Structures are given as structure tokens and as C-alpha cells.
Image (cartoon, rainbow, N blue to C red; front, side, top):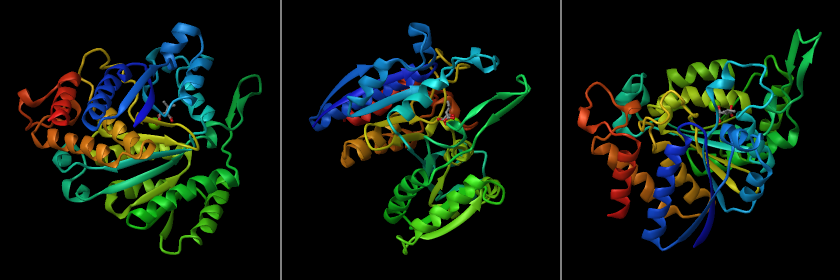
Length: 358
Ligand code: IPM
Ligand code: MG
């Protein structure tokens, strides 16, 4: 198959980890006789530096014309402590999600058995946990009206959802539940928020179409607690943009490290594949970032956007095999990991490629 991929590495470790992701794509193309062509585009701080705009029009045009997007990360510490900055790298990521209508963010939380001891949660609680988050991605307080009043002394962000926005993510989540353990947990804050009451209403309506799926509703505070207390009780979780952002960072601990978690952002057109971790400027340029979230994002791309199931499995199996051989990046190492097994970004990539090329 011929596929055209836009690589948007972005900021910080985004460059280092997507480089490995792209090598994995090349290895898959060679092994399975596909032809993958690439283009690159700017976003985030890198785009601000080059053009003044965190999401240049050209990036959107190239993305729309591609079959999939391999994304790195956005962010720069210089903005984090400057609340007055009007132009921010994150606007790039939010902008591309909106421009491409990527309303469903799939974040699979699956623990590789070898990483049981990398988590701060007890192994017996974690073992067997397998959760698929559907985070709504183009609505909520992220895109509602915001501003200042009272001469700047009062600020507001609006949490807002429309029926169609809840319906379309609910359908994706229920469809996924049907292919898994047929359990769906919808997370909201319907005891307080009106937007959550609409959310719950719509989920209940859609649930009638899926009588085989066992549905539960949890308030976000309780869900946050249950995720750590008993992660195995969850199968598919569907939630709004803000709650999903927070809960999936929390859930990353179930998988051992943020450095392991991949995500797919899909809508009705080109899908975007990115690690859930950020730009991590504290380790940028040191060559120690974990590239496995980018590698696993490639697996999601092959599976979801290209329908290449065997190729996707080959990538996941390569990750599994590298972990089984005891190799770790710093973030997933534990005190028992021998120093010679702790690899940098490129070395970890080389281990993956070696298995794919075998
Ligand atoms: C994520 C990130 C982004 C978000 C930031 C960088 C805007 O935290 O993808 O989870 O909040 O969506
Ligand atoms: Mg986040």
C-alpha cells in the first residue's frame, strides 16, 4: 500500500521520539512491501519561532492532504511561567485537533507484564488491567468562551457541550466496547455541572442501541479514586476533554510511565497519532527520552488509519520483546535494572528495529 504521512515533531523531545517512530514506519514499509512517503510540518514553539504562528496554515493544508499524521509534542517552559503570553505552543495542538475535526482521542492503557514493577501501584492491583479511554477532544472548557471581566480581575472559561458532540464520541466508545469486554463507564460531574447532565442524558440514550454493553456512570472524582484502587474494573471509559486529560495522565501510572502511552486522535478525516507525554524540556537533547510511546503510536496508526493489523501487531510484539529482553529507558527502569540494560532513545529504537528487521 502507498501512504503519505506528515511528521509533525514539534517541540522538546518530540523531535527525538518521532525520529524513532519514523524509522519504525520505514522498517514496516520494507518488511511488508509498502511505500510510505513523508512530509514534515511545523507546530508549537518551533512554528512560533519560524513563523510567529503556532499552527501555520501550511501545516493544516499538508495534514489534510495526508493519510496520517505522526505527531511529537508541543510546549516550551518559557510560556509556562508567563500567564500573559497571548501566543502559546499549545494553541498549535488544540488548533490542529479543531481544524481536522479530531474529536475522539483514544488512549489505550495496557500494562506490559514486564513493567509491573515500574509502576508505583502494587503489582497485584495492576496485573491484567486493560482500559481504553475515549477522551472527547474538540469541545468542553478547552474551546468554550473564555475571557476576563471586571478590568481583568475576574476570569472565566465555559464548559460547554452540544448533543451531537456527545453522541459521536459515545458511538465510537460503544462500538469499541462491543469489540472488547462490553463494559462502558461514562465519567462526568453530573451532580454539579449542567454540561455533564446533558452528557449523561445522551450516553443513556445511546446506550439503548447497545443492549449488550453494561453501562455505568461515575463522577469524575470517584473515577479518579477507582482508577488507582481497582483499575481492572474498567474496560472502555468515555469522558469529556478536561476530565479525560486529567484521568489519562493519572492512568498512565497503570502502564508504568507516561513514556509508554500512545494515543490516536480520530475524526472523520486524517488521524493524528501522538504520545500522551509532553515536550519534557528537562530531558530534551539528552537522548534519554523513552521513544516507545511514539513507536506504539505508529502501531495505532498502522491499525486504525491504514487497516494494517499484522504490521501493527509486529510493532507491539517488537516492544514486548525488547522489554522481555530486559531493556529499559530511564523512566521505566527500576532499582533492579542492571546499568547496561538502561538505554537511551536511539539505542532503544535500535533494539526495536533489530527485531522488526529480523
Ligand atoms: C494532552 C496535553 C494537551 C491537552 C496540552 C499540551 C494542550 O496535555 O494532549 O493531553 O491538554 O490536551
Ligand atoms: Mg494531557
